[in-house]
Image 1 (cartoon, rainbow, N blue to C red):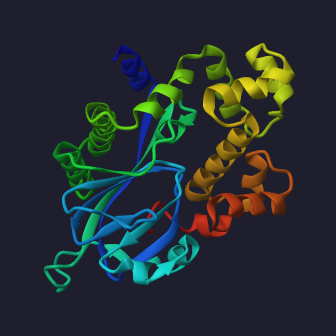
Image 2 (image 1 turned 180 degrees about the horizontal axis):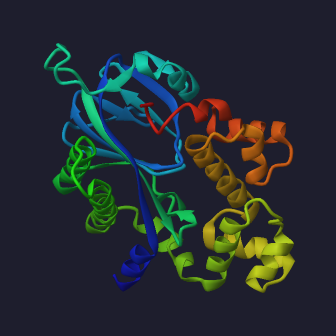
Image 3 (image 1 turned 135 degrees about the horizontal axis):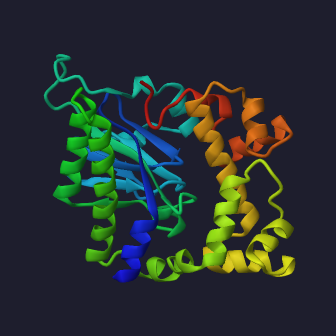
Length: 307
C-alpha cells in the first residue's frame, strides 16, 4: 500500500470541466475519444458503452480513462442511431444540451452529469491510461456526491470556488484509486504497469520529453538523458511502459496540441511548430489519424459539449 501512496503523491490533478446535460436525442458515438479523463454520472435514463452496449444503472458512474477510444451511447435506443465522433462533434447541440430544469420538458428527461479532469504522474504521463485500465462502471455514492458538489460550486459564485473545485477533483482521483483497490479491479494491470513509476531514469526521460516537445527527441538524445546506449533505450522504454518512445512522444505532442487548440488562438501552423512538427500538412494528417477529427474541429469543441 505504501507504493500506491507514493504514486498518488506523484499524481498532478487538474480540473477541466463539469456539467449537467440533457439528452435531447439518442445517439451512439462509435469512437468517443478524449485526452482527458471523463467521469459520467447517470441521473436519469440510459448511458451505454462498449461493443456489447453495456448499460450504466441510474446513480452509477462510467469512468472513461484519457486516451481510450470507446463506443458511447447517450439515451435509450441509442444504438439505432450510430455516428462517428466527428459527426457527433459537428452536430452535438442536436443531441445534448446544458440541463435546464424549467424548460418545460418531460420529468423523465434523460440527463447525466460529467467531470473532465487530468491526472498525470510526474506532470508528464496520463495515470489511468498508462496503467492500461479500460472504461468501467463505478457504483460509489461518495464519488457521485463529490461530482454533485463540483457542479454546484461551478454553478455558483462563492469565494474560493476554484480552490474548492480543485480540492474536490483531487478527492475524486483518490476515491477512484481506492475504489479500484478495494474492489480488486485490474489487479494484473496494476501489478505490471505501475512499476515504472519507481524508475528514476525513466522519470528523467519523461521529464525531458515534456520540456522539449519542440526539439530533437530522437532515441540518441533520450539515451543520453537516461545514460544508456542508443541501441538499448527503445527496448528499455518499452519494457517499462509497454510502448516505444517515439509513439509516446507523438502522443505527448498531440496531447499538448489539443491543449493549445482549446486554450489559445494560435494558428494551426504555429501550434504544429510548437509541438515539434515543421510540416503543417503532416501534423494535420497525424492529428486526424490519432483523434479521428481535424485539428480545426478540435479547436471548436470543449471536452464533451461547447459552452
